[in-house]
Image (tube, rainbow, N blue to C red; front, side, top):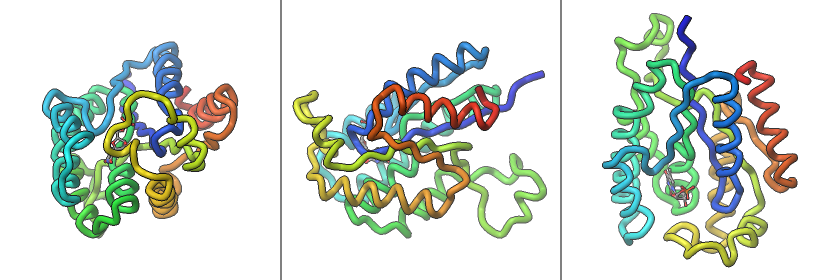
Length: 223
Ligand code: TMP
């Protein structure tokens, strides 16, 4: 019997420490016999990785930034995420649309109505793929992660962890006040769709964070 695809995203402000746990989860899923697609945003395809370099390094106005991020996301969904889910794989995606609402929306103060419109254009699931019950729903069906793991860490603590690390990019070099808004943005996204989120206290020691992350997947019966 073929397994059902699982789409998991990982979120948090820069410095929250998600990378090591994504790698550990990938290992755990492989050990459980699942086929994985490990990917990230912005990026995940040759085109989207080119767009990532622009987004992280070039100055641009907020609408341009949002359009490029969603263009990258469209290519990523079409060429990587949707096909992998159709093959029944586990897709572990380092950031997805919640990051756009948190960074561009809350962090930069860009119009979230525009972000919602772009989200609907880019992530709309074609009616042919939707069940009758889904089609009957008033709102359009969007491709969203089955689960979003949010590594929640105070911006002051994240800034300390990032200090002295590699040369910061356009976002990493933002002040703590920016990351406070970003963290609030994540909290709002979780409030709007609490079932989809697992909030992890990322201030704990790394091993304790990992145990919490693992427990989320065990309790869902996915590991
Ligand atoms: P990363 O360093 O975790 O790979 O993330 C890249 C940076 O891009 C990070 O600072 C957050 C930012 N970003 C946005 O501003 N908007 C988005 O939609 C995404 C996916 C990332």
